[in-house]
Length: 261
DNA sequence: GCGACAG
DNA sequence: ATCTTGTCGC
Image (cartoon, rainbow, N blue to C red; front, side, top):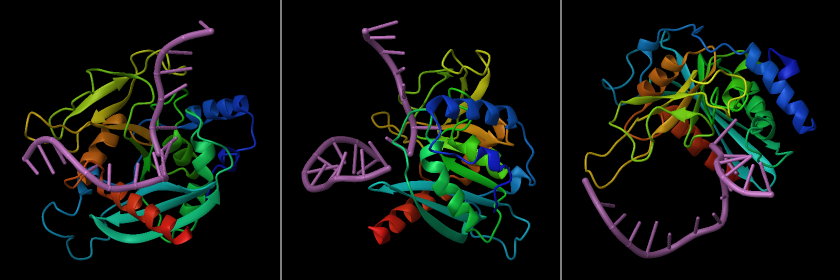
């Protein structure tokens, strides 16, 4: 898939202020409401009702995106799935021009992700990107930046909270299948306090009282609402904390990294 | 100045 | 993200 908005391709040579300014533009261009070309109810993980039904060419393509690093190089892997089955896997290696800076992650990893997406033969209906989307200081996290640049629906799937106020403490997690709203606070400079910017989502939980799993932090990237983002993550989870497309991309990134090392 | 911060 | 063995609990 190709870049649709060249002006938003992450440029690592920009100053921090210019990066922040670009993110504000991206956030204004982003759509945090549903504009997806498929039915959320048709999305599923492998372990649901057996395997994929014969020839489900109508089932949406859900891709997982994840990165690994080798020295100063970023390895981005994209795994496209349909009904829980792998349809395509690609990866790209690009130099990581700048260090990790909270709030500016897309300028470090974005280039490698766009390169990997460019190598794709299939055009995913939605991308599950590791990191934040709308849950970001300027509502323009990695998932939002990538989604707006290629104009494809994206969901941010993070393992920890960057900013925002969870409606309830996240420590200890919640019952499996549950989600808790995360609202904008003073750290989110572009949104009014209280705005629903994402959810803490419990894709997995233990039954025993002396062991628990912390929730995933899910937020809209582009062209999806908070509710749909959470729904998609829960629908593609298959017994593990990470949704299946993300897990597969995780593994693919590690394998590609090993091959590059 | 202090705190807080995805991957 | 990455560096890494054992270890606690199902």
